[in-house]
Image (cartoon, rainbow, N blue to C red; front, top):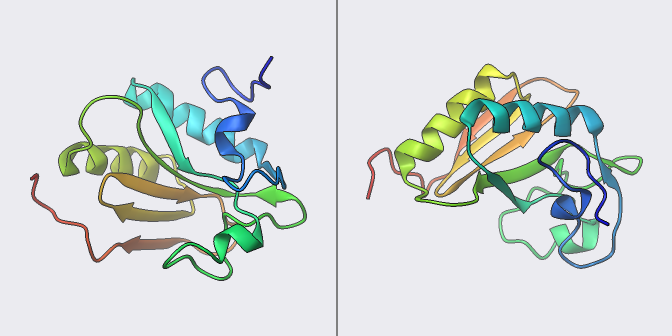
Length: 136
């Protein structure tokens, strides 16, 4: 039986893609993700959750000090998108806006997904250079 973290999120959804099973998600971060899921009213999915340092190093453009990499065994970041339906820019922007209203500390806007994290340091916001404000 998969470990349930909240009503809609299971632990395996956040596991490192290399299979190493390093770290676990910050419970407060997952609770905030649940509030985002409840607010948006549709299923979301994790594109990238926990990343061990070795796996993170294989990802083009990943920050060396990424919040996806666990600190003291705890991960504070994930990239999310819609589980079903279109990933239009307007829909992704709505998800980003709702996440901002829930006060995620770090947020990135990407084509087809957003990054959210619960870093303890100061807020950070960025937009990927591939982002386009118009729907395709």
